[in-house]
Length: 455
Image 1: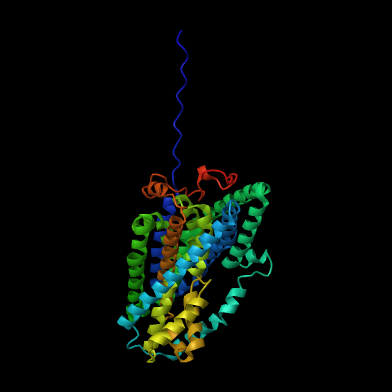
Image 2: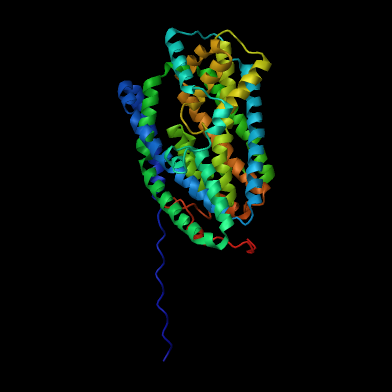
C-alpha cells in the first residue's frame, strides 16, 4: 500500500491593493474641484473647510509618528555617537543645499525680472498688510526658544515638529542608557507605531474629499485672471524648481547612491499627488518616513533626517523667497542691490525654519521679512496673494523631493542604506504595503537588535 500523499495546499490568495483606486479618485476629485471652482466660484470657496479638515487630520498624526519613529531608531542604536553623526551630517547637507537653492533663485530672478509692468492697488496693499501681520515678531532667538516645549505633553498637543523631535531624542537617549531594561518599552512603542500607521491609513481614504474641497476653494477664490497676469513669475518659479531638482539633486543622487531620481520619484508618486492636491508637504511626511524605511534606509537615519529636514531643508521655500523678493522689489519700482538681496534673504531663511508643510507660511515669512528690512516693499506682497496657493504647491513638492533625496544621500554617506533592497523596491519586486504603511516582515514591535549583532 502506497504511503498517503499530502493534500496539496491551496494557494494563498494575493491581497489586492485597493488603494490604487483611492489615488485615482484623488485625481478625479481634484479635477472636479477645479471645474466647480470655475463654474461656481462662490460654491467653490464655501468648500474650503473640506480641504482644511483633511490636512488637519494628517497633521494630527505627525507628532505621534515622529515620536515613535525617532524613539525606536535612537533607542535601539548601540552608540549615541552614531545619532550625532547622522544629525550633524544632515544639518551640514541642508545648509549647503539651501544656499545652492538661494543662489539659483537669485540668478534666475535677476535674469527674468518678472515684476516689470505691474502696479499696486489699494486692495492689494491691504492684502499685503494682512500677510505681514501673520508673520509676527519672528527672529532667531524666538525660533530657538520655541524648540523647547512648555511640558513634555505639550510637545504633542501643540503639533510642533521640532518640539516633538527634541522630546523624542531625549527619550531615545534615555532608553539607550537603560540597556536591556529598555527592550519592553521599545516593544510597546513599536506596537503604538503600528496602531498610529493603521489610523493614518484609514484617514487617507478621505483624501479625495480633501482634494476636491481644496482645489474648488483655490480656483473659486482666484479665478483665471490672476493666473494670466502673473504667469511669468509662476512659470519662472516652477522652471527654477525643476532646474534645482533635476540638475542638482538628480546628479547627486546618481553619483552618491547610484539611484535614478526619476525612479525614486516614481516610487513616491502617490505622495507627490497628495501634496499636489493639498498644497502641503506635511500631509506626506508620515508616508515618507514609512517609505524611506521600506526603501532600505535604516530607521535611525530616517527618524532623524526626515523630521529635521522638514524644518531645515526648505529648498523650495528658499527659491520662492528669493524670486518673490526680487519680484516684489521690481514691481514696486525699488529694485534691490545684490548686497541687500543677500542680507534680506539670509534673515528670511532663518525666519522660515519650522514653517515647512504649512500652507501659506512662505508668504507670511516673505511679508514679515520685508516688514523688518524694507517696510516700503511690503505692499508689493499683495501682487502675489492671488497665486500664492499655486506657488505653494511647487514649494511643497520641491521641499518634499529635497527631503526624500537627502534621506537616501545621508543613508549612503553613513553606510545605512541597503542599495540592493532599494533596487528591488524601485523595480516593483518588493512593493510597499499600502494597507498598513509598514513592512510585515520588519515589524516595529520586534526586539531591538543587540549591539553585538553583525547587522
